Length: 396
Ligand SMILES: [Zn+2]
Image (tube, rainbow, N blue to C red; front, side, top):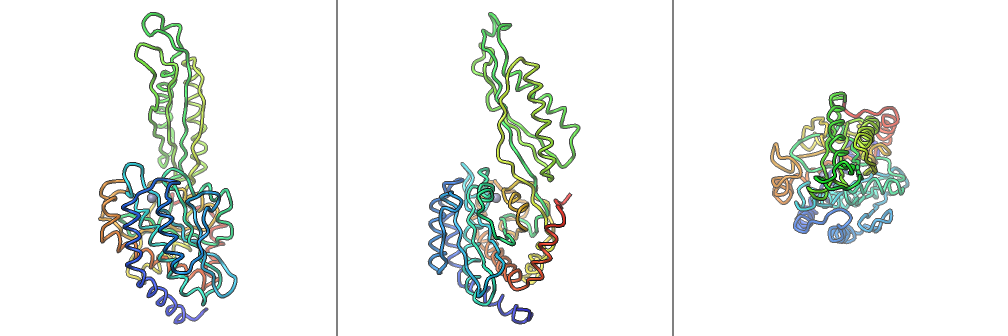
């Protein structure tokens, strides 16, 4: 399909199909919002999403990458060709519910997949609804990536809830690290000299990290908490522990800084005469920006009446790891009022509001038209691939 008017007609038909799904998508988003499930426990959300996809003729594969709440639903075109992935999320925040708008992602992208299915007979390749669990700290996409779940995907599309009209130019890579100090208990008054103070290991680690902070790049963040401060005030602490997060827009710099933070803890162990055990959380990489892919999104958003700015996202996501392996774009149309931050009560309310639901449908409209461009125009995908191979821009 090279003819511009054919392409516009095809997009119009897909958008009409999406209009017909409006009530169903809203209802699905509200149900998921009212029944929040945390990472890897999203059984009800996945059941409802599967019900909608299957109800519209999409075959849903369950238990992708041996994760019970990961799914994939593929709509095939008339002939073999590229694969566009719609990267959905549906997990909630522990204790706070759907305050990151993932209900709007899970439901709206299901509607987008169904709308695209309606026009796939006129396109080559396929569209896959990729249901990825546990974005909030569980790293569902990282596990899925390691297990080959995204093999064959040529471009990955995601929108995220938020107050902005923007496309993400990057995000912060992050890795957490746990330090568990073990010393020797002793009576804190009668014979403190017989003890080795594990809490001192933690406190000296913080002092050393505070000194390190002055010598790190401005795009990096190191933040920590004490997770175990000792057992009782009259005992020299036998055990103490701390956890740190290390972040930067540059994943390689996070790895470098992690080595220096670990050196702080080892030095603290030496200073306090204790031993330290080190364990790491999953490494969440930065988002690799592919301007050509973002350009297709921005163009389609513009046609639909939205002027997207470029924005560096100040959070971290497992989408970053996927973006290092597959050309990926993440964008936002307003689903909550200006200035509202994610992971707040205001964001929670917005996820079930008219603004949130309307934003979800707008996001899905951009996703549908972007996917059609990528499948209909091999030259666009070629440019995206070349740009992706060519560099690693992270926004700074
Ligand atoms: Zn989120």
